[in-house]
Image (tube, rainbow, N blue to C red; front, top):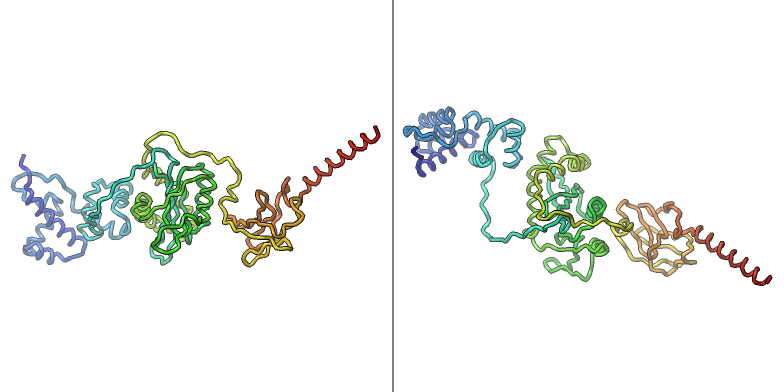
Length: 421
């Protein structure tokens, strides 16, 4: 069977490109005729052939060889119109999936991409010239987690930009946590890390950028000073989790590609559902988008098993807090910002004057004061005292005093018996 020559194929591709541009309205049919060097009447005939026979109609059919590609003109016109009017902000992959799932149109991804590029609806990107080596994934879940955030106009048509915080597994691309926040901060990243540890367990290492809440950098452009730890570095060290800093966006390629995919899908899905508030957007993330990602965009780990280890302690409330060192005043008060925190009497000491204590800003907004492992006061976000559950080491010390009193009575009876004998 005869095959089309390379030159003829290239010519047909050029003709198709011009026809698609005219079909999409970017140029007039008269301009299309001028570009191809033919009369307007011939242009209308070629348009008719393309309308009747699709891509096949552009070939010289005198050799009786059918084209390997043939898409009806009505379908081409419908696809371009659909993208222009309804899916204009979708990426090609997302739009290609919608064609199949919502309209039952079975077209190859390369054809759809080429048609949209030819019509001028999407740009044609050139590959970068720099050669980079691929970094192999970790073999087990929980060996390395990526924590990153992306500031983007997630709500189409809104000037407000939110930060989207994501924690993803290096081995599988599985997303364990994602949340929209007004601004990425120490507290919002601590909240994400605590959630993963509570739901998955302790992991081996965390990969982040060099934002100020991840690393202390004295001057812009200089390497981070590892002798001074941020609150997050201190928390990771207490949990024996290795902290790895990335020194370029390319080094965070996996999280960058994830955000590239999400930026091409998530705003469009939110627009389709009429979601415009951060609360509803986070609900959609949790209930729909994260499960969809973990079902469709993950890869199996190289080895079976998991590197996650259950957390056995009860100190996460303190570990994932912002800690401040203070010295108690002679009147047993702590100066903290605009608040004066009063320490109540305790059985631990007669007075805490001039004692070194720690003030903990917890993720729920409350404040506590710690003396070693003991809690000697808890306050709300306005510095007002909160009632705590009574325990052996609480500040009122009733149980401890009762035990000492019982022991003293027992010793007294023993002494009386010895004296009588």
